[in-house]
Image 1: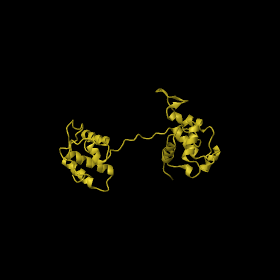
Image 2 (image 1 turned 120 degrees about the vertical axis):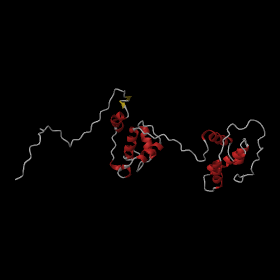
Image 3 (image 1 turned 60 degrees about the horizontal axis):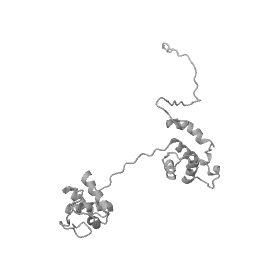
Image 4 (image 1 turned 135 degrees about the vertical axis):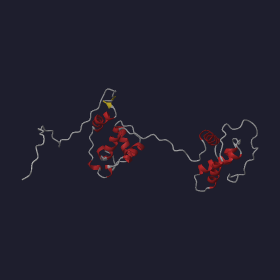
Length: 229
């Protein structure tokens, strides 16, 4: 098998004992794909190694450890993993995309991070001309918001406006910002005064619009139309 880095194994390389637990089967089309991938020079090394393993197992299906790992320069666990994967899930060479849990940041944590990013470090006696993710994280943890530096970076990166890039000096920071923000933001998270709201509790939201005056007026039906003389 010319695609392997060493001389091919002989068909009688198995010397007794129970055969390997997982015995994947390969179709002709799959082997042709593995041969093509094994010859490519620009394909990821991990994919090429899997193709070489498939060719090796097709030629010598009873090849056991440590012979197969030794020939491919891989661990016995790696060979076992792909034997089992191909035998149970079918043949594939590429990595499957890993499902990622969507990142969810608490509203209060986002508010504190944004507010501190828009404030001057001098307001907290920090010897900095501008905040960094590390200094924001330190302030947030000091206020009871347990976030990491990486979380601070993600929160700031996901914001569309990023006002701290332009006018961080006009963002005054109320000393009681956390407690005042919690009164507004906690109900949106189903929390009131530190307790989870129950199924019979409701949150009513109302917007204040001082420019719109509520006035009582009489509604009259439209009159008859006439000709303009």
